[in-house]
Image (tube, rainbow, N blue to C red; front, top):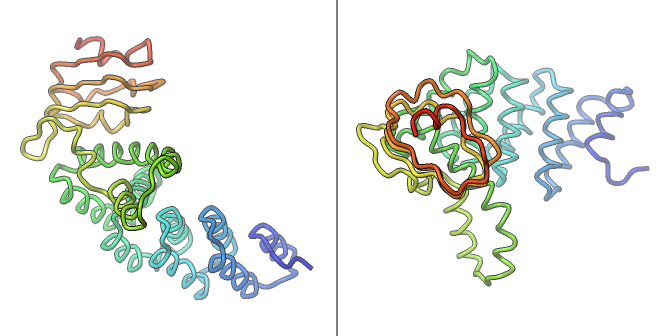
Length: 267
């Protein structure tokens, strides 16, 4: 007998009708409660979604992950499962999460999910997310989304370097928590790249030390000056017809040897 069932083995037994829905959900819930691995918890949520037909126990398990789990990755996994499988019941827990959650990872991925998928019934959720970031950044929705995308890129870099950083420097638990909060929650770090803004629009922008330029840069209609330097990127957004105000570009010391037309023509 397998003393440590995996999400895959539980789902396989469910498909083979060796265990029922309630039994499978209880086993999934046990894995979520006992596992310290956020990837395992997210996979478990995915499997719960596969076998669920508006089950109350399943909804409670997913809602609890959305509200109580410490990992923004798991929180987003729970939000995605609710959106996909509980479209009539997800509104209240999602609104609660949006009010209380400041995670860059959660907000960025939830916006992308709702913008790239056909979810017309979630217009209120989209409006709440944009209201949160526009209030935080004091910018219009398009410019705020770009800053959030930049903060997400910085978050990915921070996470990749974090363990190496801890090996080099001894930090107290309080200092670790402060460092994590500063780099994982929406704040002013992304705004540090903005040289000038006016009336809620970014006018001048400096992008450096990036591995990617977000495609949302193409929505900065009032952007007039742009510097891209010392970036290790492989490609840029190729089509940016909305950069109507762009007048001056500084482009230097980047790894790519080709620039897109919207930079070359304005240089």
